[in-house]
Amino acid sequence: MSGNQERYDGCSNSRSYHTPKKIFALLGLMLLIMGLFFVSQLFLIALIPIPLTFVILRREKIQWLIGALLFAGTIALIVQPEADLFFYALVIFGSVSILLAELFERGFSSEKVIFISSGASIVLLFFFLGMYSLRASSGLDTALHHEISQSMAQVIGLYEQGGLEVDQVAQLKKSSQQIEDSLVNVFPAILAVVLIAAILLNYFLLRRWLQSLEFPVEDRRPFWQWIVPDFWVWLFILSGLMWYFFKMPVPSRIGLNFLIVASYLYLIQGLAIVIYFFQKGHIPAFFRYLGLVFVLLIPGSYIFLTLGGLFDNWIDFRKLRAKAGVTIA
Image 1: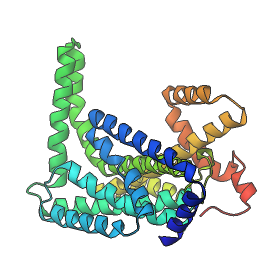
Image 2: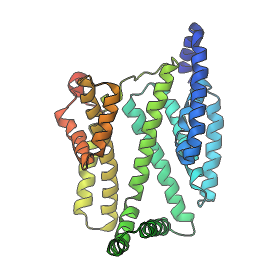
Image 3: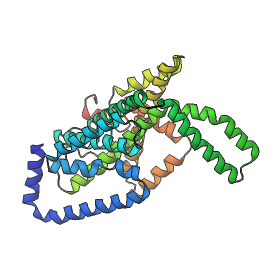
Image 4: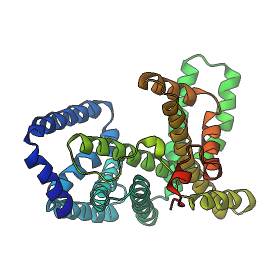
């Protein structure tokens, strides 16, 4: 990582007046982390890659120390799989930090950084899930059914205390088992989607922060230029076919989970298309964000956004593929 570090040091030496900006940025990040700590510790852990990646990029040797700690944490989780969820999150997002630093160093595009980071972290996540299933006292599905059942019982209890009609409470109790089974079936996809969302948030916040500190960032394209690689459409189609036509539980479940993950990425692309049209219309930033919230609140908007992101492969709403003149891979 000496290349980026030398370039960064060169910028710092030639522009010493940026040092106060760095200090204020670090203080601002510390205040943000302290504030988030009181909101959600898990959300705080999900933002760990931002300061860790910056430290790794600035101090190359610390990567080995962080890597050693993560390796020790991985071994501990293999030996004791029933550890707290926060330890799993620390190891996964700590690994994301090392990977993000390496990908920033190599100057990869936004799409490659996010896809590689997401893919690697999802593999690590499912490795932990597999080890949990093999070594824990109870199977993963059994543990999930137990936790979701307890949560649903609490929710139904709150509805009863809130004065919900008896018939509606009875209907909730009747359908609770079906909801529980559905959540367990798509639980891997839910975890993957949450992980991808966290990596997206980390990447764009980290990139903005590095740019403000004059750090050499190769890909400076705005979010509305986000493009899902073309090959992803085949995963979307094949997973949909597997889910719909395979009647056996395991292949159908695998297809459904892959379909949800693929749909989520096209949903992100759909949001990028909406932001593009806001940008093209020269709408002020405040009204762009307000309009985006309004779009997300419209019932059924997620389906149309996902379809818009999917059909962008052929329609090219933003004319990005036409300008590039190449297939995005």
